[in-house]
Length: 306
Image (cartoon, rainbow, N blue to C red; front, side, top):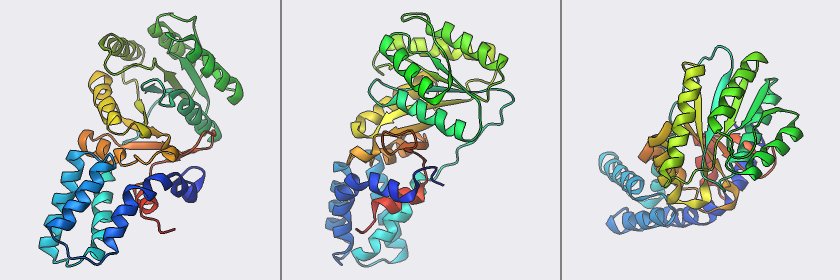
């Protein structure tokens, strides 16, 4: 279910995508045209233009062709139902919530500019609203501004923060944060990391080092690795997710800036090509503008008639 601010906010956030790609699809669906190769090619072109990606687009077209042939659909008014069903099938995935004894360690990764620090604050706020004790760790020591920004959020949230001086060893921050979280009996430790450009191998190596430090302190940690992705970057978001997955495991996606882009179709590509589920979506700049990702609500929002 949506956490806040409910389904209508999600539908509003999807307005740009809905008015772009999916408005074009809706016009085809309502045209009562025969389902033929020309119609399917039109749909394929529209999906590709909406950053759905080649692999995902071809998968959807192939599935529609199979169902049209097997189930005897005749005109394009039936395509909307087919498309919704196939999108739902594509997006539905089970996120296994691990049972954790003690502190749940969440490692948050992502490229600079994706909204990572704000997303961390939203997560902390969400857990604190549930009555949980949260500790933040400023593991992005390469930028003083990143440490300061997280400190501002921590003060605003009245949330504890572990920080070192700029250019300190990020792994040392993580080590101290885990020690503090265990001593203070925290429920969650959320660790920020440097905004690594996914093309920088040395920075990816640093991420691996952090991962190893966590495992030395907590054998089954980190318990969750969340990649923050900016929806407005389109197919580049898929490339980022692929590189981070290769570097240090990615369990789920926090998709930000959904309200400011027409490229929400990239969410479909991430699911299909990388098998990484989207767990949270950002629907604005406020702390409350976070929603758990619900495939049905997302699809309904894409095809909403206004």
